[in-house]
Length: 300
Length: 266
Image 1 (cartoon, rainbow over the protein chains, first blue to last red):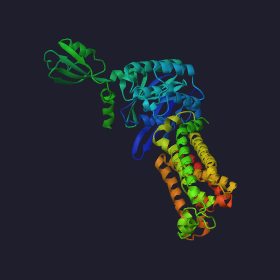
Image 2 (cartoon, rainbow over the protein chains, first blue to last red):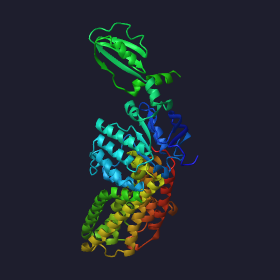
Image 3 (spheres, each protein chain N blue to C red):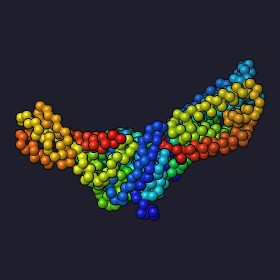
Image 4 (spheres, each protein chain N blue to C red):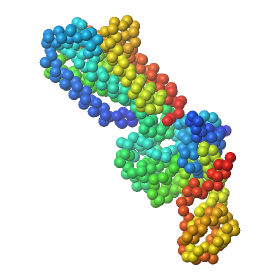
């Protein structure tokens, strides 16, 4: 395969063991040019280890990882990567200015105008030392350094953690703009909503193994959600049990709690017979929503 | 050379404090010289000390401790000045890779288009530059401040130059050993340990082996012996005080980089 045609990310049987712990287990992954690939999994599933293998910080125990057809440790490849780590570990005396200047020089220059616009968009004061910044502001410095040289591939580890909702939206806009420009995004996260908002395709990692690889639409169809319906009077038994999509029913004093797979349309229509005071769908957490995948892989 | 420039900038402030410390050490040492100068009792006292102790404090037969070469050699070059520069080398060397890997700051730098070998090597070069600057500063302040105390009487000029060059060589060797320990282990501790073992062991062995009448070839295994063997200020320059330590320093650096570029980051 010529380098020009090589996919942004390709792994074959990628495996990493630390002693007896298998952190990444026979991972086969291909991320296509121009897509936003969501890399989902609970904490400790091996997401960060996979990223560190991609960037050449770790050597695989078996298998191989390639970025644009080459090892991620190759400086020529690194020039094309923007990396946002889960935690921005840099000398606390550095200011954002220092980081931009230092990393810009290492990358053979960055787009100055674009960098300035990033600082403005995220309302970041570039003159303050990182040690004095809040978690959210340090996050912004991480974002600026990852995007400032307009890389072909963005590897984002838990990108919006620590950002307030307004800035999360701004960040999502930025990602969409870069994708429109032709960049590829590898988005690692343990929360579904941010992946759902951006990714077209999703891989779910659990205990180092890829348990699901699907389009976000497929996933949404299969995803389960919890719905709490609070009613004025007691809910008649048997109302929801037979409704399509309902997987479990639990009655409580104020109403009923349901777990629904796929569309909730039938449930809402069935609930129309009741005097509904409030509907609550709690914590759209990956751990809840993808119970199915976790359970399935536990049975083996 | 971006890494080198950055490493110099990062350590600039700390260097100024070290310079201040060494200037104070030089000043205090020189200020006491007039009270020692020409004191015969002092030499007699020294003659009664065990040989090991005399060797350890850089006191040599034939060089009066109340003369400028004897006094400065014993009080600075066989003592605190050398030890401090060696400590600067060890602390700096252990931090270059091991320390920055341990505190997590190395990884994001390595996500940039720069090889591990380049980062490690440029950082070590930066430490050598800092060490050279610190040594040069110590030399200049010593010479300038010695004037009012007439503390350079009888000091061999070439020998003084070589004494400072040797100081740089010895500190570089310790820096490279500490660098290798840190680069191989990925932590600061093993680097500090490796450097400190060489420093403490070498410094003590220099005095004790001489007193114990160890054969010359055994004593010659010790880099501190190469430097401290004979009073450079009294007897003039010796190439063995500089060249072997500097040449040997290349080995741990090469070994450290060779391991660092292949292993997993922590």
